[in-house]
Each structure stands twice: as C-alpha cells, then as structure tokens.
Length: 212
Ligand code: T5A
Image (cartoon, rainbow, N blue to C red; front, side, top):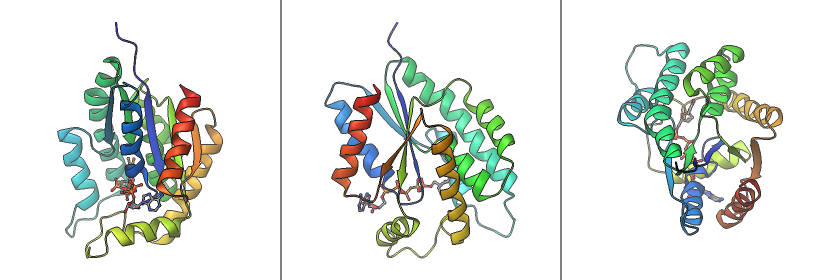
C-alpha cells in the first residue's frame, strides 16, 4: 500500500497571493519527485465547480440566504473530499488546496455572523477524517489585498457576490482567521504575505521542510 500523501491548505483574505504561491509550491515539490495535485474550494470536481459558479455569480432578484450559501459550500466540499482529495491522498499524492473549511468558519461564521458551533459540526460532517496536515495562513493587510486584486481586475465591471461586500464584512473575516490561527497553532501557520512573491515562497518552503 502506498504511503498516504500530505494535505496542505492555503487560507487568507482576497488577493493574498494564495494561487500564485500554490503554483510555486507545486513546482518546488515536483522538483523533489513528490507527486502533487492542486485544487480549490469551492470547486475541484465538475459538480462542485457548478456549485462554485452559483455561489459566486448567482444573479437575479431572488435573495440568496446565508444558510443556502453555507450549505452549498459544504455540499461542494463533500463532493471534493470524497472524489478528489481522498482519492489523491490514498494514492500517495500530496494535495494543495486553495481554501478549505477554515474559509467557511471565517466567511460564513465570522463574516456572515452564523453560529460558529453549528459550522464546526457541519465542517466535521463534510470532511470526516480528511483534515489538513498543514494550513498556511497568508497574513496581509486588507487594503494591500484589495490593491492587488484591483490591479488584476482593472477592467472588470462586475464583481462577484463576495467581492461586492462592504469592508466590515472583511474585517470580521480577518478577525476570524486570526482566531483560527490562535486556536489551532499546531496545524495553522502564519506567513507574512506582504513581502515579495519570492520571499513569500521562501517562507512557505521553509515551513513545508520543517513540518514534513
Ligand atoms: N469562500 C470560500 C467562502 O465564503 N467560504 C468557503 O468555505 C470557501 C471555500 C472564493 C470565494 O469564496 C469564498 C471566499 C472567496 O471570496 P476566489 O476567487 O477563489 O473566490 O477568491 P480568492 O481565494 O480570494 O482568490 P484570489 O485570486 O482573489 O486571491 P489569491 O489567490 O489569494 O491571490 P492571487 O495569487 O490570485 O494574487 C492576487 C494578485 O496579487 C498578485 C498576483 O500577481 C495577482 O495579480 N500577487 C502579488 N503582488 C505583490 N506581491 C506579492 N507577494 C503577490 N502575490 C500575488
């Protein structure tokens, strides 16, 4: 039987640089002959990607309830864990995932002010024993993250349901992530995401080398 792979998740606010760094970490690990898959949440399977589209871009006069948003996130996660993450880990591959259940705690729990204990139970129901071996939290002042995404989306006129939220929503999420880091200090490690792409990459490589 193959040795189970490692499961690494990246968390942080919008534009913190997660996607950029996931690609660099994949290259770093592949150069060490480690088989890696990269994936994201919400999403990662055909059905979960359809749910992502609805979660992020549903338009129309019908109000999307926060409860619906929460359950769609968890439904997408169940598909993703069962059909992609578990399969890869059991096959000995490492999985790097752009956001996972800590985002639900931060966004739906702190951001949308939903019951944190209920979210903890839902997260546990969705993932079972598939918990990350390491979570890297990208610490970046909100304004800097917005600035980075503003540059990227200079020509974009329509923002998704999350990008259109008010600053208070993001302040609560930031607080949520800080609490998650503090309460899970064995699993969740903070890096300074305000540095250059190369310096952030070096921090991540150091962490991964230390942990595994
Ligand atoms: N969500 C998700 C929930 O509400 N609950 C949940 O349970 C889950 C799983 C997902 C949305 O869903 C919400 C959270 C989100 O709102 P998304 O599009 O995947 O939506 O959003 P993000 O994960 O925030 O993705 P972003 O692409 O916005 O941010 P990244 O991936 O952190 O940043 P990245 O790498 O794309 O970089 C952004 C820009 O900055 C530059 C890059 O070149 C890019 O232009 N950059 C840097 N610039 C300077 N210095 C650096 N060090 C830089 N690193 C990157």
